[in-house]
Image (cartoon, rainbow, N blue to C red):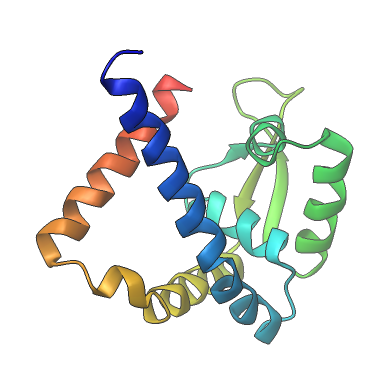
Length: 143
């Protein structure tokens, strides 16, 4: 085993431990707004002004497209997102936040940041470095 493998394994362990330790902090935000944790996650994944293909959402959530349809139906019925044909390929459906969805997403993100006590222990520079590392890991071009 080369030297990088134990570090990669430890990084995964720590990321998973951090994620599961913080999951409880996400639910109260959504519950206050009558959203399930998965609905909150969907709102986080769709960035304002950046339509997201439904198939990519299904891949990201590791679920069947039929499950995504139900999630989208519920969010769309609340006026939080729109489902439209892609301008590049009309067979593909893309999701876009409505103005109300973008406001609710921003509110959720603010609430998460306020409740993110572990990240507050990091210095400004450490948080900035963490953001750059995580952006490199989730870079859409590499997925």
